[in-house]
Length: 453
Image (cartoon, rainbow, N blue to C red):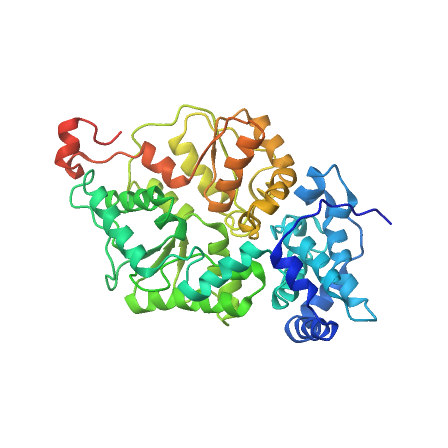
């Protein structure tokens, strides 16, 4: 038996709620999740696993913590789900808290381990079941619970009011028209080809990303719109907290906005978990096999714009550039080569990572971990040490990270480990290198001689 040692973390969302849990309630929730929601699939995985441990080398936590066996994926299942299944007596609150720490803070649900399992067991699914149990018992990181409460009240993860959102769009359109002649951020246009849905951070403290997207859509001449109503935001932190009923409500509201506007496709911003919720988890929870409106990631959209000549690349980035493969886009959707096509078209010196594409390591912020707040930051810094080593080996100065979670944590890693990396979203890369045709430049920009690149 190995020894399990962890740094203590104070988190009200786990500490206080665990104290008041009655064993009878814990037992009832566990039985509901394991017997009513997951019986056949769970039984298949549990009876198939031969405990070989081949999943260990796939886990970035295991590698970052010097191959501590307690961080191996099979060990995390053993400490949680197998413990639940083998129990002869109901668990207490402290035991649920232990399960919650492992499922929420020591697994990003990235699914790399499933690729190394000889039977393809979806270990992330097993740990998501543990999150589901803990979520129903309200034993989850406080910041993540706050995100979910925000979704319930505002349909955004960041408490953004609908009037603030519309005001921001109008302000950004006014700013954009200083550069692009007659540029528009169309609201509630019926029958457009694309409905763009951003992360709420794009209308709060990262508004330049929404401005970039509007600039690209205008220059490429895309028929697009954004909804003025609830459902405009694409994130879904309830999925990470195990609050699946709320997850389904958010996705339904999201697709209802598209139904109302009769758009042909939904274009999502650069957020991996939002894509996963809309295309897989949330959609299937609602009983749809596939999204009821075709759902296009920003990576695929940019790839098609460059490939088809809808935008022209005027110059290339000269500094050495490498890439982060967001798990939801690359491992789970296979968009890695499209991402590299964009980078090679816009960058002179692309440095590939090892391992790459679907085998690339998780950034250690996925699965909602980026949103757990200051108490848990050390998890991302320590658990991402293998990622830091990977970036160092490339010698790159710029990392393209087309996901809010990846982007944020790599920026923090760069500061924490003094890597000197500059992190860019894909839309920042496009805007830096894209040509703005002479005829589209605003008069002021022409006079200043600063139009385009």
